Image 1: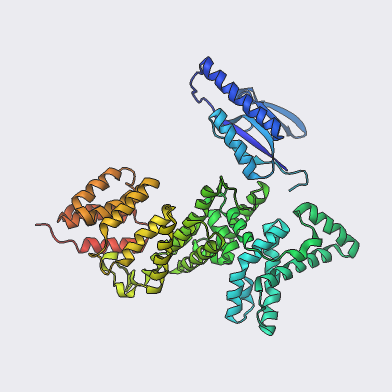
Image 2: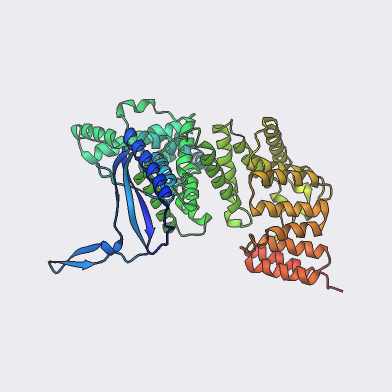
Length: 120
Length: 415
């Protein structure tokens, strides 16, 4: 069994259509059904949604001192907006879950394997 | 890592056997070891031993089985030596089981089975790998080409190709791309990906002398796929398509110049290949599960059936293109359909059909080359010249440009 990160990348300043309450409700229903499905099959490990890069802080070491700066680590157009960590037997199984997430959130997903505990 | 046989000058038949059994041996050892690089290294080791022993004792009756057994034993020996000592070897054996998912106690049972190669080709052509990596892996692991041979086929340096292969194998391992034949639901899509890779390998071998061997590599891969998946008509369709294309190769070039189908000396076509291709197409028609490769093969079968260009059954070809377009509505299919319409309804109808797809294929040289030849048929030399010039700007190879320049030179002056 391996673990995979399914991450959703949002573009900064991307103008998204203001969802109607009906759209939001449909969205939440799809997400809830998906996560129930994940939990039931043992695939679910963890999920989270993130605040935007404006809320990010970078911590680094400089000349032995910890230095704190405002902003994201990489000034990029796209940032991780949310993610799932799932268990899957292999990439095909992870891709099948990713397909379900894409259907639920209508947004592309990047699938990346974790190093396994044996260091593979 | 170059192919061992090249460094150990054995009789050529030993090298041919190496190439034939390479894919089978690697595929089986990937199953045994659960690791592609380990499998490749073990096969290389076994080839070194085989190149001495086979020259002395002759080629064994089951060369692939011999290579797999020898490779497996060498892999054990290497681990033994590395760990120095029987007790440590036991631990390593246990470690190997955990890491690679095999039990050394069962190794005797691991005779090569055909499904191994099928599993491996689905791994190599997994859609999570980019096409150039799929192609390189397939040629290296299934086709048994050396890294250097694969590199030369794609006009990149050996280190660049080695890097590409390492990256692809890294992704297979890290992301756990499975080593199995896809289930029923995924099979059609995954199989399409495998067949496209083989066809891409074939087409890369057309019109460039240094890449010609890719065509025989692709044919060899297709033949083994037909053997492995006898119930998939598209696999047979791909083989028929390539065999029928190949049958015309002897007439395709004359004194270094490209010869169009219209002008080819049909007596130079390979009759045995045409018979083989026709037989496969007939079997596909009887099965009645048409798909893109089978329909393209059927179109080539009609061409190969004609004693001359003028006696080609063009209405049949147009109707096959109609069918093909209904399941594969790409602009390139539409372009070929337009060319066939030129033969049934004349150049004006064909130009109308081209206009319908012109915006999608504006950067495709064959669209402009086709327009040029249709305009020439209408006696519009100036317009034909403009179209040919645009085609030259877009043409991918010097041989294409040379051919198109000749077309311009042979245009009659407009009255």
